[in-house]
Image (tube, rainbow, N blue to C red):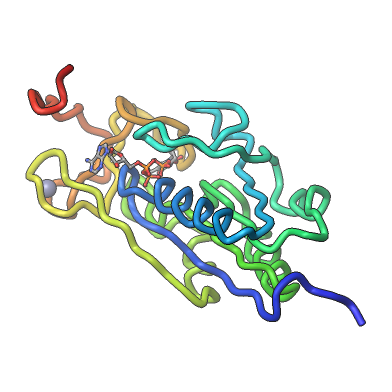
Length: 200
Ligand SMILES: Nc1ncnc2c1ncn2[C@@H]1O[C@H](COP(=O)(O)OP(=O)(O)O)[C@@H](O)[C@H]1O
Ligand SMILES: Cc1cn([C@H]2C[C@H](O)[C@@H](COP(=O)(O)O)O2)c(=O)[nH]c1=O
Ligand SMILES: [Zn+2]
């Protein structure tokens, strides 16, 4: 009989806007799995090279070693038979194929934790996230803080002039906004708050 690492696998989705803490939450769960002596592998799309080519890096500079891949199916080439937990960051950059890959991993008894955007810069559902949300056992929706008004933010405001859905970037290219302050078209950046609190 084929042996699976856990009795049962499942899919956890961490979604939300940019700056909402998706990567921090992914890193937190992976760290806890490591404390629990679980065998873990983390993947990210090669496209996401903004802070580092190989590491998963949060906007607050938390870091995690990962394997960069171009297509979700490559996970099977890298997968160790011992792996009990698979993490995937920036899952919105993979095509629809990532849904079947996550299903197959969970069906093998693996705990699959994916993090990604649920909406694009225009506030439209960002595929394949809707499909992942539908099949996941656990869903966590993160919120950032709107940089315009301070309310909870579930949208990512684009600040650079492009109509392409995929434009890799961080602060300077996007900011977190609530539904009232968000605009579907790219806008000027909001002047930053001066935060004496964090000055050295
Ligand atoms: N407008 C904002 N709202 C909340 N956090 C922000 C904001 N701008 C920057 N941050 C920082 O971003 C961190 C979250 O980073 P990260 O986990 O990489 O988010 P995500 O993966 O959702 O883009 C926060 O802990 C905070 O330090
Ligand atoms: C809204 C939106 C974002 N992106 C890009 C910008 C970043 O490279 C990632 C999101 O990173 P984060 O970890 O969630 O901060 O996605 C995009 O390509 N298209 C969009 O519409
Ligand atoms: Zn707002």
